[in-house]
Amino acid sequence: MKIHNAMWPGLVGKGDGPDQEPPIGLEQMLDLTAAAEVNGQKFDGIDYFLFLPHTDPEASDEDLRKIADMIQSKGFKVGSLVAPVWPGTIGDSAMGDKEQVDKFLSAVKMACRIAGIFNDHGVREYGCIRIDSAEFGLDKWREDAKGNTTKIANTFREAAKIAADHGERLAAEGEICWAGMHSWKDMLDLLEEVGMPQSLGFQADLAHTYLYLMGYNAPEHALLKEGYTEEEFYAAYEVMTDKLRPWTIDFHVAQNDGDVKGAGDHDKTGKHCQADDPNGKLDIVRCASYWLKDYQERGIKHICWDGCMFANETLEDPSTWNTILDTMIKVRDNSI
Image 1 (tube, rainbow, N blue to C red):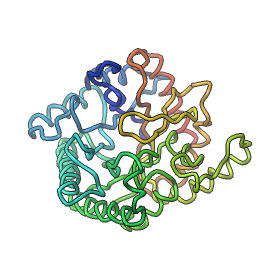
Image 2: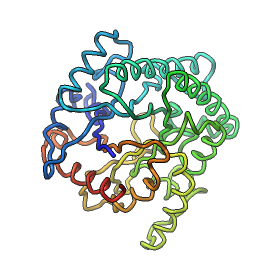
Image 3: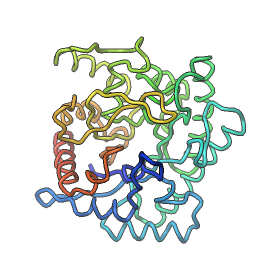
Image 4: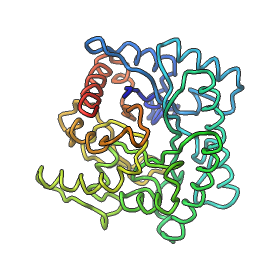
């Protein structure tokens, strides 16, 4: 099992606004990742966000091959890719009108095109393409929950056909801010309604799925209450993972301190924490093992660290990445 680092923490939550830090460029993120080392072990590769300023999703084949050359020169493979499906990027809402859905599908086509270029180059040999419903918040979804879930499922089904035609698989991200994907039960219902497990599966993130347990944004599906015991936690964790693990084809290692926050149009989302955060709610290694049972049967060949919205000072500190790499090695060694 290969160990990857995500490049998007250099972008997510960054920008030119008054309260935002500037993005960290792709090459700097690659160099920070390449510098990490624990007992001779280094990161094997990266997972990659297909949007500016790291990548123009409409870049020429030649420019994309240059990016592939640069990634390969750092000693890395590319694993899973993140399609730019959101409003304001290339895409739009998966439960929108025809124009919006067409934009969503166009973003998936662009991601598949880039995946093909990276595959032909040789820098990419495994991984999925990540999507979500691209519908921030739950108010509109709740106006017709069943009907809107069906709209998302129909869009995902068309997207999965596109991916399959390109020899790719899509992984739907489970995060509580995405309409129709905001609880473990709603996520499961959506996956089952799409009904294409060979082409569309689940992308599990330890931080986000912790919030699934607690029922944030979907109290009716909570499996735990505040003040839970360790025994209650793992009993509930097993219920959730038993339902979603068969669909899980992409996996993010992360930590969460239980905080839920809103940002812009996001209707509450989870907070990633550093791997050794003293307030972290998760035994990362033990929790990861629930998701990684029989991982080979689901085609998982790598795991990826995800830690969005860390301060640039934290991201630029070499000790951050050594601690993360050490945790990732423990997850891998406990699961193989």
